[in-house]
Structures are given as structure tokens and as C-alpha cells.
Length: 563
Ligand SMILES: Nc1nc2c(ncn2[C@@H]2O[C@H](COP(=O)(O)OP(=O)(O)OP(=O)(O)O)[C@@H](O)[C@H]2O)c(=O)[nH]1
Ligand SMILES: [Mg+2]
Image 1 (spheres, rainbow, N blue to C red):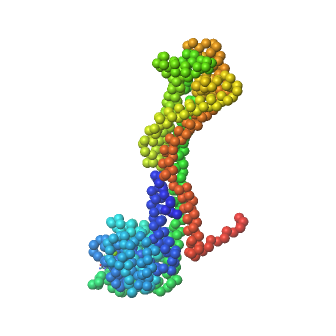
Image 2: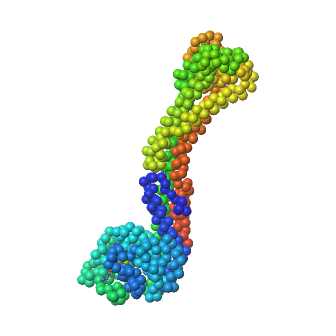
């Protein structure tokens, strides 16, 4: 369920959330799930601390066998060594716990392995894991030490008279303390004359950090024997403490439950933090989408406005319209039964395209220019808007600041398809009896063009007046005809339909352009359910704590508000 929780958008909260999620998944796999599945599995003591503190030496001495190499080269331990009674060996070997570490029987330098050693001197039910140093100069050591500690039922923290005030161990101790992990402290290698002073100071520090109740063992600096072992008398108090723990199943269970419940409880704020980060991701994705949609919505509005304010009825289109009307072709194609044949004759004789064709081309290029401009502006606005958002800075490549490469062709196709659509509309409406009387089938082309011109005119500004209709040779009679045409309810209805059709096609075109942005956000968007799942996981943790008897059932809320 956590594997699906990605934090792809580069928000400030994203990379901490990714790290947290990874750590959480690791801790679930390494410790929480296997431990929950088997509460009576042997208690694992992880021995952690600074390099050279004497961890390996201590483990060897406690289990009375040279299981882990101790040495003068720092750091010595690079790969963890787990030592247990032969009876517990199967549990650790099967790899439920710390499943990412390859089990081996031989000493290894590879931090990806876990060496398993049997020590018959160690009672069943208790295992020691000798870890690399926690504040190592070697990255892999540090990471591994952290991972191992989070798989511990009990932290055996080894420090020395020289190192006990170092910052890193204290940071780890504070975290462990905060989540209720069971901690046992060892102050190792203390010069005998300094024991009282150092032990007192460390106890004081522990008390300040609320760690005063953690057992503290003080080991004086002694000579190690030929085997590198500490003298028995030095380790006796610790050895006794651990053998009592091993012998007492209830005490072991109490330790395991305390650490496990602390780790589970610590999941709750972590899960909430991740859920909040997931919410932020969703909100950011929506904000980006909205910036894109707003840019393209405004593009669409520009086109709508352009159709309303008559701005398309200037320049070339107006000139060609006047020519079309002025040459009388318009009226002839409406009145005479010559139609296209005549267009072609004129074109042949004068060696130039007929005014009708020129008008249609002018309309096309005027519209295409408008669409290209709108698409360019929308792309730029969407791009700058998204880049200004923290999550959008990396998400969109620079080419999105411009319209798609094939936008000009698509815009041309759009306009031509629309023009064809208008002619079809005129043809279809020709079925209307009243209308057909004025515009017979052969006049479809001319009527179509008039409808397109009407689309370009504002509702308030029907181009019946001098502005549009006047052209050389336009007679008063012709003006009357124009007035009749544009004033005709049928033409107005056609123009309204044609306008709606054009705007619909423009919307599709702009939607396709916007999709270039939206698909990128879509791909980067976290699963919609992520935040809910994370909160669901928190609820599951609560239920698990209750069901496994780790915490008392919550008291039933008392009824009424009381006093
Ligand atoms: N004289 C003396 N030497 C000790 C004592 N404890 C450890 N040493 C020596 O100190 C050196 C380091 O001890 P290790 O047990 O390897 O220390 P470590 O904490 O495991 O170190 P890393 O594995 O590097 O983290 C070794 O040479 C040990 O023999 C002690 O109490 N007295
Ligand atoms: Mg060591």
C-alpha cells in the first residue's frame, strides 16, 4: 500500500516524503511485519555505537567465543554478525527479519550480508547482532547501522569514556527514547581512576534526556586476553542481566512489546506526514492543471470575442467581400442560374481566382491567423504559469511554451472543415420552404459565404450597411437585397449555428493543445487514493496495536458533556 505512495512533483515536501516513505517501507519489511507475525521469536539485541568502542570485543566476551573480528583498524566491523543459540538459528536464517541481507556462514566484508554464528554458550531466546559503527566515516556502515538498529528489540548502546558526549549517538538515542525503544547503555573502557566521575556525568546526561531508567553498565579498561576477550569479572554483571532476561519469557515479551509498540506508534505521525505530503501533491497537480486550463480558456474567449467584435471583418476579408459583392457576382449567383460555371469562366478569362474563391481563402487565412495567435499566446501563458509553480519548474519541457509543430496545418484543416460544414448547413436548411424561395440550391456557395460573413459580424452589427456592403458598383437595389439577406431570420439562425460549430471546433483544437500539459501532470500525479490509503494504514496500525494486545483498548467515551 505504501509502494504506491509516490511523491513525483518536486514540491519542498516531496524529497523528505520520499525518504520517509522508503525508510518506513524498509522498517516494515525489516522488522515490524516479521515481528508482528511472530511475537515469540527470539529477542534480538543490536549492539551499536561508535567505532572502536569495543562492540565486537564485548559481543565475543558475552557469548564466550570469537564470533566477530575485533581489530585495531577502524572501522573493523563492516558487515553485521548475528550470534544466537543453535535452537534459534532457523528463525534468523529463514530471513523474515532483515530480508534484504543475504545470510552467510563465513565472515564477510559485504554490507549486504548477515553472518550467522551459533554460540551454544548463549541461552535460547536471546540473540546478539554486532553492527558496524553508527557514526562511521563509511557511508554504507552508517546506513546499515541505522537499518539494523531499527530491526532491534533492544538497543545495546556501547560508548566509551572518550566518546560518550559525541552528538550522533545522542541523536539516535533521543529518537529511540522518543519512540519507547528499550535501551541498555554500556560505558566501556573507562580508566579505573575516572570511573566515578565519567559514570556520574553520563548518568546525568541520560537523566536529562529522560533516559535515566535505561540500565547502565560501566566496564573499566582492562587487558584483553590472548583471544581478545575481556576478563569474566568485567562482563559478569552484564552477562547476568542478559541471562536473567533470557530465562524470563515474560520479561522478554515485555521488552519486545515495548519496542514494537513504540515503533508502531511512531508510524502514526509518519503516516500523517506522508498523507499531508500526498495531499500537497494532489493539490499541486490540480493547481498546475488549473493554470493550463485558464490559459486555454482565455484563448477560447479571445476567439469568441474576435467573432463578436467584428475585428475579423477588416482588411483582406472586407476587401474580398466588397469585391465579391461589388462585382455583382454575389447577386448574380443568387439571381441568375449560372452558378459555379460562371465562377470558372471568370477565372479562366481574367486569369485570376473568382472573387468567391478569394473571399473564402481570405476568410480561411484570417481565421487561421487568429487561431495561431491564440494558440501561441495560450501556450506561452500556460508554460510561464506552470513554471512559476514550484511543482512545475521541472515538469514541462521548453517546447511547450510554443504551440505544437503541426498546429498551423491543424488550424487550416479546422477552418476548411468548418467552411465545408457551413455549406452543408446551408444546403440542409435549403429544405426550408421560405428560405429556398430566396436562395436556390445553386446559390449555396454565395449564401454560405454570406453566412460566414454574418458569423464574423457582431450580433449588433449585421453587415447590411455601407461599412460592409458598399463596393464599387453596388446599387441601391443590391443594398436592399443584402439587407434582406442579412436581416433574414433564416440567415441569422444559420450564422448562429455556424458560429457555435466554429467555436466547438476551436475548443477541440485548444483542448488538444492543453492536453500536452495535462498529460504530463497526469503522469506525475500521485494515485488519487494515496493520501486516503496512508490514513487508512494509520487506522490499521491502531487496530493492530490493540489486537496484538500492545496497548490497552481505548476507554469508551463517556456520554454527555458532563460539567
Ligand atoms: N585494552 C583493551 N582493549 C580493548 C577493550 N575493548 C576493546 N579493545 C580493543 O579495541 C580495539 C577495538 O575494539 P572492537 O571490539 O573491534 O571495537 P568495535 O566497537 O567493534 O569497532 P568497529 O567494529 O570498528 O565499530 C580492538 O583492538 C580491541 O581489542 C578493552 O576493554 N581493553
Ligand atoms: Mg566491531
